[in-house]
Image (cartoon, rainbow, N blue to C red; front, side, top):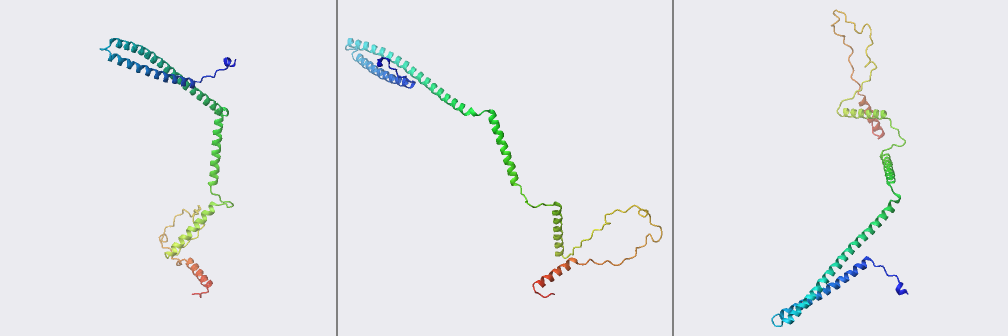
Amino acid sequence: MNLFFAKKEKTTPKDAIINLRETLSMLEKREAHIQSKINVESKIARENATTNKRAAIAALKRKKLYEVQRDKMSGTRMTIEAQAMSIEAANVNLETLKAMQVGAKAMKQIHAGMDANTVDETLDQIREQMDINNEISDAISQPQLFGAEMDEDELAAELEELEQEELDKQLLASGTVPVSLPKSPLRNTPLSGGPLQNAPLPAGPLRNAPLPAGPPRKAPAPVEAEDEDDELAELRESMGMPAM
């Protein structure tokens, strides 16, 4: 009972293609065998064409029969070959479809937790973190003077003093004694309006008279030179050298 009702194994496209290819190989061998017989009968007919016409005619008849078989065999072979090619093409399409289905399933699994909104949110987070990183980098790269507050006016005044000292040194080196004039509070003060401000000088001999000569001006004391002499004397005293 099992022999009659046993389930037949399913034939796969690969098995069908293999079976058709084996059949094609058998038909090609059979066709080649028939062609060899046709060649033999042709040779017999040619050899007996003048000496034994009956044998030559019999050989030609056999040749015709073999040619009919060969033609039928060739047609069968072409049909099976076309069928095998169709099955191969269908199998290629099937394997391609299976691969595409697997790819679609994989893409579906990949996109299960991902959509356009998720991508936009992720990109926004990336941009936000990059901005934070740039702010941190800028903050770290800026020089900081911890515990020290700088007064710009004080620094400018100190720079001005250093420039004045350097200028004084250059003047001393050139043999010129620097003199700094005190600022007069009345130097830039405009004259107050009064009766004498715009009053004309009286006409007379005193208008063009020369002014009396005042006391001679004294040359400014060499303050810087005296300071250098004092410093030199202190240096000699600290080194135990006699004063000059």
